[in-house]
Image (tube, rainbow over all chains, first blue to last red; front, side, top):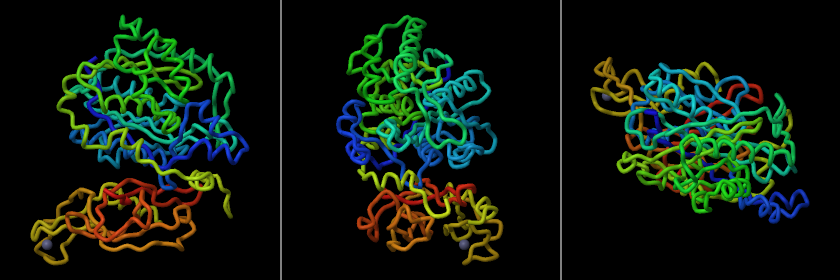
Length: 350
Length: 132
Ligand SMILES: [Zn+2]
């Protein structure tokens, strides 16, 4: 494939809450809960941040590093399950805010936590076919767990954007593979504020079956083995699942650690694999090979086999903040501030 | 916020697009059709410019008694910022504690939600500033 990643940018809000603080409110041992999930803290958007602002910041960071003329962007697709509007796209605001509008196409994607990688596949297809010169794919979320639900310990906020093109490609896409089934592991009905999940059903038949199958079939297709990769990035609904999946596939912990952000920032849903891959690209060198596998409930996995090119030597990463810098920029808040920020307090007139 | 007016101002609010007088070289924000110094001499010479988005705090105040729609962030900081190109504008300073804001502080533009027209209405986005 000639189409590949030309640039990328990430964004993580700076507020955090610890599992201890959440557990205290619900009469649970939050520290033990956090340990069980492999989560030390999760990110929270400020009251004036949402999927649109996160997507704009991530896309602007990608453009700062590339130096391309945004008017050459032919498509913007944003994947999320927490778009601020039910009807009115996130992507049109992004297009205007990065000065890519109006000679272009835009749409929003939805597929639980893999909407961002679905957007990336579509942009790669448009660029590869020659229909557009550059395209932007974004995965971002500001997900919510219902108060008192186990998801409240993990559902967090963040996102990353990918600029795709054929010239000055810093990361080449060697191949893609997707695995899709009808699995009711997690859902949210129209008009409902919080999602529902199938409890234990979310593990084996959903996450593990899809991630493991997609990873194995991707390697089969490419004729590769786990040791051929420098890094592996897996969807990370908590800190435990990706570690167990990586081990089952035969990857060493060192291959997984760089792209595993959930322990520090929680599950960023559609932002998870895009952010994990950004963390890897932040430190990778020419020749590094990366396997990235997303997972979206409902259910499906997208796998990408990626090789970092020599172009990475000239790439100006430092023009935008690194993922590690945004992970470190943390301000802890208590549960009261958290429910206010996440608009869970019902006010007069609401 | 008035929707048609906001919509007309999107280029300024999203991307800090202002003007530069082709006669005297002065920068303006928001956009102007005529330079207040050069008047007729600037006609047809006003160029659109995208500001770098960096600048410094000239003065500020900490808002303790905001409009109810802004109470989530109370207390927050409103500041007059001088862009590096010269023009001054008013903006909220985010991502820092009110006590850490000071005159001369370097800031940069960020993209945030400015307001929303109730639960069912449109959401307005645009620039705010944060420490550089
Ligand atoms: Zn003038």
